[in-house]
Structures are given as C-alpha cells and as structure tokens.
Length: 171
Image: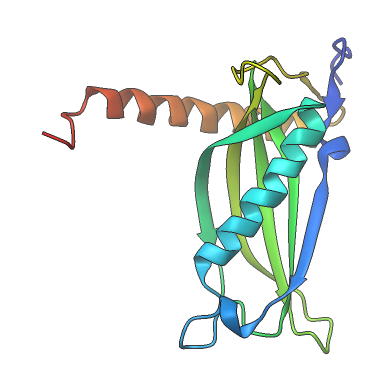
C-alpha cells in the first residue's frame, strides 16, 4: 500500500490480549459483571497495546472513547479483552478494544463490548508528551481503519474545543 515510513510499525505488532475468569466480587446484585470492572481491564489492555507501539516508556490514558456494551457478562465466565492500535497521531495512540465473554465450560464466545481509547506517550524524565512511530498501512483494511481513526480524532478535538467554550461548571 503506502511506502514504509522510517520507524513505522504495523497495527498487528501492537495486538495484545488479556483474559480472566470473572468472580463474584466483580458482580452487581444481579450476577452480572460491573461495567467499571470491564472498563478497567479494557484500559489496561489498551495501554499495553499502545506501549507496544510507542516503544519503551510510559503512556497515559487521555480518553476512553465510546465504549459500547453489547451484552452482559456473568460471574464465572471467561472474559477476553483484545486491543490493537487503530490510529496514531504525533504523540497520541488510539487503540480499538474488543471484549468477549464465554461460559467457562463451553466455547460459546460472545462479543460483549467494543470501544476506543486514546493514550499519550510520555518522556521518561519530564513526563511530557513525546513523538510516537507512525502507523504502517499494509492493506486496504489498514487504510480504512486509519481513515476511520482520523474521523474519530477530528470528533474528539471538536468535542474538546466545544468544551473549552462552555461556561465553567464551577461558577
């Protein structure tokens, strides 16, 4: 597709997964896992994916964007979170995060959540944003994913600009 850019990395190099068996302490009184538990796991998995792309050093969460829960997760189910870089800016990295669940005793995997998170790579000592490698586009699907990521980033920046023009919440 595109000519490789110096230091560019493909999205596939950032793909990472995390799996757990859910426990009663993670559930509400209805026996389903709290969305906040899933968000924490999604953030951790997304951060590892972003760190793989950024290289050595720290990343910090800048935004959890549009996490959509598609179905419940029950106590005792195996939950798998999969994250992969979907867009890269100068210092920011967006990851797509998919969450799946399945009963522990049978392979009936369900897609239960999808969302995007944005991380900023930080310098080691000053903890200021640092540049990250570009995303290498290798396939048509990569190109489409990058265009969709550009659109999401444009929307995020517009929301941020609109928020800056609103009256303070602490009047």
